[in-house]
Image (cartoon, rainbow, N blue to C red; front, side, top):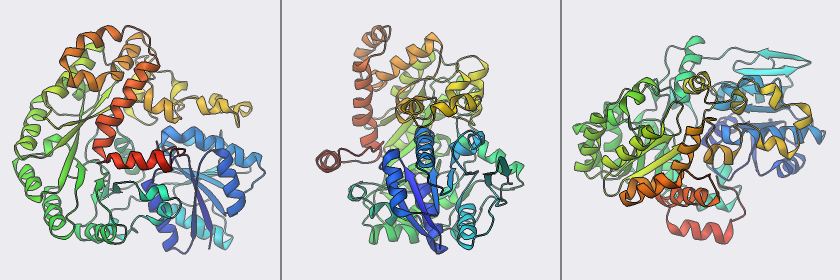
Amino acid sequence: MAKVLFAQEIYFPFQSTARLSACLKKAGHEVVLSIGDERKIVEDVKREQPDLIAFSVLTPYRNHMLVCANAIKRAMITTPLIAGGYDITFLPQILEHSDLDMICLGEGEGPLTELCDHIDKGKDYCHIANLWVKRGGQIFKNHLRQWVMNMDELSFDDRDLYLEYDSYFKIIPFTQILVGRGCPYPCSYCFNDGYRRLYKEAGSTGYCNLRSVDNLMEELKLLKGKYKARYIFFNDSTLTYNKKWLFEFLKKYKQQIALPFSINAVITEIDEEVGAALKDNGYCELVRFGLETGNEDFRKTVLRKNITNKQLIEGTDILKKNGVRYSMAMMLGLPGETLDLCWETLLMAKKISARNSVHAINIFKPFPGLDITDYGIKIGQYKPEDIASHDLPELLKTEQAGNKGLKNLALGTRDLCFFENYRIDREGELLLRLSRFSHLAIRFKVLRPLIGLLIKFPDNFIYRFIWKATEALLNIRAHANVPLLFFFKYFMFHRGKRIR
């Protein structure tokens, strides 16, 4: 049996970690969790004495991983370090220029389980598919294994890993779940298109897949019974692209689960049949779809999202008619976007809103591996070093490792990812300031002239406070069905814990 310690910065149940933990436990290995800064992680590693330290990396927390890896090495801990996730998959050069010993490209269930089997048996693990292993000045770059198409074979997420770690996780009012993997669309701003290409080059013939409805019902019954789930948050990119699967799901969910839930969709998938089925189900409290930008030419050419404004209007009209509440996601500060285009997005959002619509407004970030990121670099609106995908050695100089400066480097920290814009042109600054007032601009026409004046002044703490407050009250709370009681419990008992 090998012992694995998963380390992360924030108090949030990562589905990737929960899935990997379930697979490892099924194979007979032990899994423990550590959440906190580098000092806390090092303390936990010394106490737990794991055989492997693992990081499931999201871009906003990449630098936390780098700092932790360096702190672990400086503490003279020889336990091997591995990192994986979308960010690492599109940034494999990080292995050469960091304190990591291994990285995992692509999906990790099989590779990580095989790695732990090898560690347990004292076998060499330099040639495991999906892993890149650094040893003796050499990096062993192994091929990708085939994409898993039968997801019914995978274990259900390990919910106990988080619930038993800290009481905070017991007050989270929603339960996340994934039904499948992949997405059938080629959007330039989504990791799915890059993932599809990687696996296609590796010989996989399929990419987009869903679990069977019966397999899903089995897990949902477990969540409702054992874990007392109250609200189900489906995280898949879209759950409406396969109508046959969708109709079976909605029928069985109503009969067997009967809990409020929300899903992602693509608005062109919402036709009269789907709208009626959602209404008949009666438990779908929110359908989330992407508006992204209000200009359909920009949407098609830059974002590669072939959806017209007419289709947005038709789809939202169907949802309104059937009494289904919906949320629209949009991105401000896209590469190539002008101030006029940004206003066009906000006005389009207002046009297709219902009385109780939710607006998910994101400040666009040029994550590594995205085609749209390369486009932004090409037109001169991003510095390659800010993305850390073209000049990583410079960013990870030895003298910087382990100090506070590393935490502020490039696109790898929480605050920079959630609240800033990386465009270096003047218009990018205007778009960032407009984003601070975006929720107000959509809802209150009378404020738009004033907002147009305010964005001419430099960004400041008041603007950032307005953004954070309106985002929390008008988006985050509504999206995850978070009651005010949660915030009371958090501030009373868990306020010192970073949750985002």
